[in-house]
Image (cartoon, rainbow, N blue to C red; front, side, top):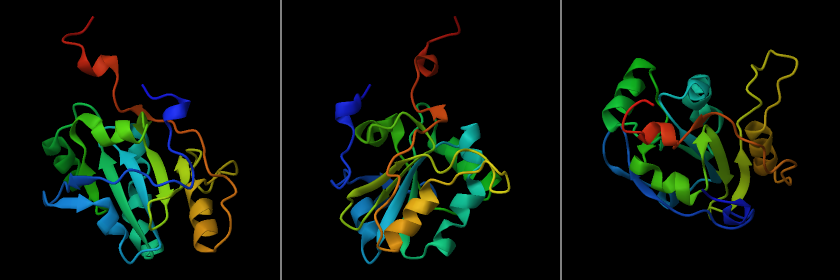
Length: 184
């Protein structure tokens, strides 16, 4: 399990990756995604995470709201098969770019332990924001607080990002319960 010293440092490049796309099987490379863009958002995601379901509309509409940014969701949950993810894509009409990280190798390298967890970066993959998309309340809730969107707005507006990190919450990417041979 990564500790605080293992986390990426703000302003330093996040590790590049090349992973197969869920829909086509063709390889998607993070650095290539950034070509011609002002930055990107990477969201660690799972088709079985109840927290991720809430963000389907947000992720489906991301490219329309932010054409200057690339988006990719990384399915890294231990034991979540490509077939299961493809079925989820169809059932939930998901249209955002989605890659499969079997075994959660990229999640581990990015010190990510739960889904959803978002990373905002510039074209050189330098980390600008890491954490939750929001406080898991709906925008019409008076207690709603967005975290990722304000960071994106500040970044695209050329302003310093006021809140570069928030705690993530959600479903574990890997847990001892996922790998037990049988129920206790």
